[in-house]
Length: 206
Image (cartoon, rainbow, N blue to C red; front, side):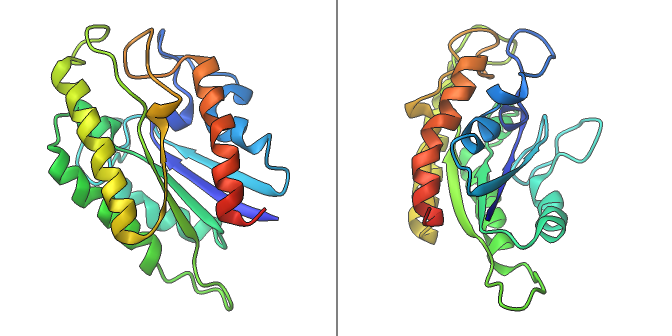
């Protein structure tokens, strides 16, 4: 049995775009993905508001770089860490060049964490570029955010190439076409998980 950690924000948590609710479990992309990977255990660590490595006010710590080490240690040994972050960086107007360094730090954390498990070399990494955004449907989601989202996808792709990690562009199958322009409809979130089954199986050798 392989073990996968899905590390993300509200898109991974399963936020409904029509309010503050949460999608049913089967519609959240990590669970939809897991349904087609019987040889893998998928652990979902989605936090609403999480950034790559930058302060964002909220009810709990939102910086991904501060939380990731504890999660790696508590869920070890892991075979794959999937990182889909950047949406809250973009929404909070963090320059995409800064988000690059935030994501780079997360990759370095996964690569260098002292797992302390004999025979465990550490997990593989898949970087996922966030889905597409739609302007004008939520306060703060304007054309600038949409354009920054495009730039973010290129940065994630380049970082995956630089660090030789797996890469998936969520915008190829998922766009926030309704609701608030940031979060996914239930069927779109489910479709993202289904689309990830094959590339994840390939990375894990399943």
